[in-house]
Structure formats: C-alpha cells, structure tokens
Length: 153
Image 1 (tube, rainbow, N blue to C red):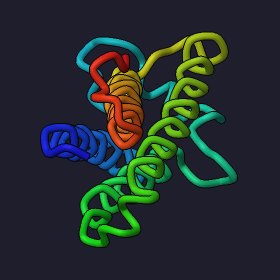
Image 2 (cartoon, one colour):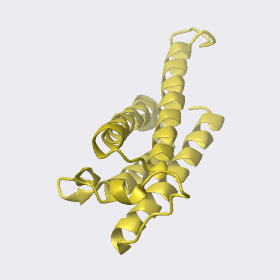
Image 3 (cartoon, rainbow, N blue to C red):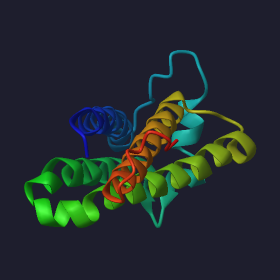
Image 4 (cartoon, rainbow, N blue to C red):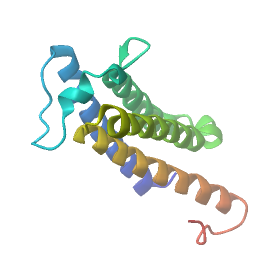
C-alpha cells in the first residue's frame, strides 16, 4: 500500500473513531447527541435498531473502527503477512462496515423516519475507505501482474 493511501485511510479511520467514540459516550452517559439542528439523533440512538444482540451499535462501531485502525497501523510491521493479506483485510473490513452502515441508514430513513448526521458522516467515511482500499487492492495486484495500474478505476 502506498504511503498517501495508507495515511489517508488512517486519517479517515481516526475520524471514524472520533465519531463512534462520541456516539458511544452519548450512549454510555445517556445524554442527547448534538445534532446541530439537523436530524433527530435522539430518535435514532434510542430506537430498537440502535442495538445488535443487546450491544449498542455505537459500541460496535467504536470497536470496529479501532480494530481496523490497528490492522492498518500494525499490519505493515509484519511485511510477509501484510503483503499477502493486509490490503484484502482492510478492503473486506471496510466493505462489511459499509454494508452494515448502509443497512442502518436504510432503517433511519424508511423505518425510524429520522436521520442522525453522525451516522451519515460515518457512512461517508466508510464509502471513502472502501473506495480507497479497493482502489489500492486492485492497483497493487495489477502492478504485480505486470500492468502499471493506470487504467484501474
């Protein structure tokens, strides 16, 4: 993975940690999230969809973002493992997170009828992370196969 892409993914991940950390703090302290007059974070945070198997989705998001950050940060320290599995792992985790976030956004829009701007921001981060990690994955494998990767995406 090239340095700019790695730094970009780590930065996006830190922003995701900040968002999920804030929403986890809101859940833990039973306070209302600051939504800036946009949406209804309280309705989303207190809906039945804010839990998965009895665990607040905010906590799961924080654990997920921290785990992905650790994979991205520590992975390159084991070059042979990272070379074979690192980029694929980052892309797969980003894509799975994106799918789950899309499901949650669907429930906000069509079931809860309320939107949480923090959740939408997290969705945007996951879209960017999936795009960047997918592009890196495809480009690096094309280069390994002898192509320069200029035509990818």
